[in-house]
Amino acid sequence: MDASPRAARPATIYDVAAAAGVSHQTVSRFLAGFEGIRPETRAKVTQALVALDYRPNKAARSLKSGRSHLIGAITHEASEVGPSRIAEAASAAAREAGYVLDLISVDMRDPRAIEDALDQLTQHSLAGILALASTDEMVAALSDVDFRVPVHLEVEVDDPSSFSETGIAELVAHLAGLGHRRFLHIAGPADWSSARGRQHAYESAIALHGLTSAGVRHGDWSAASGYEAAAASGGPAGATAVVAANDQMALGAMLALKEQGLRIPDDVSVVGVDDIPEAAYFDPPLTTLRNDFDATGRHAVRTLLALIDGTPPPERAPRPPMLVPRRSSGPAPG
Image (cartoon, rainbow, N blue to C red; front, side, top):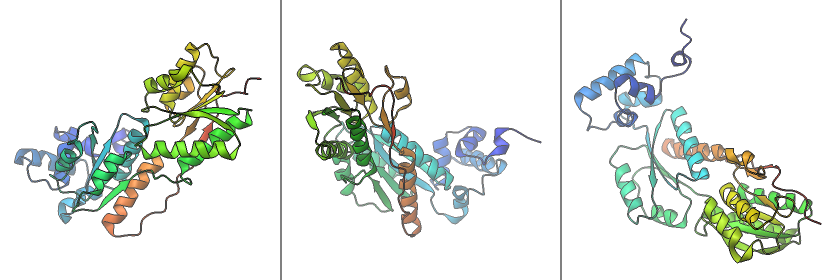
């Protein structure tokens, strides 16, 4: 009996690519019906599909039906935790549904980046397009495009009831319960809807609990910007709690505060958002929010597939962010 991993799961396009001696992008284009593939390469891919019994997969059946099972996806800031995890989950959901997700990451510093990415995507026969947008600029650019296939634009809206915002409120409540009364917020870039939502939630929670805000300082999601924000204006301006909009900025803020002679959490507590894998190993380990990026990416793909199939969109029910208390938050100093 063959107990190898190959026998334990269905073949993927990566298995087919390895067997045929080609790239997985070539297999994706072949399955999507792309004509510009050399005959000898086409023969190798076909042979590999048959040998690996790939035909039960929906993408393989498209060879007979003529229907594309290639999804074009566009994202940006793929190095950031949220966008990268959402894209990873979207790719897995597409693969499980028998589709191939061809992801292009856009450099928003290049004015032609979105246009070039769309040109690249539309060179292929697509079943649909998934746009994972986080900034106002990208949303505006994609909203002006006349797509010829179904498209789903996944963007976090500025909504006080959003899961991200309810999580920030829980962070503030956690710190207020520890006796903190004066807070500082290190926000993300103002052109990111998620950053605006988190700032709105912070300000609402401060007002709800009758707390005082020492202000809002903006970063760009990086640890360096968190460091600069915490070091600006002579430090935390009397705040005993710092709420950073993501874990990387919290990391930078912690270093800046320590360099000012402040102890964490004895003199000032610091919390973040995302629960990146390294958060548990910060010095001290970081109190943060665990966001369900997997659910976001999978829901985005299911919504697009419903548009493609002409079926009702799925209900959205991701798990709300979960507070993960660690040693970076403690009682307010006496």
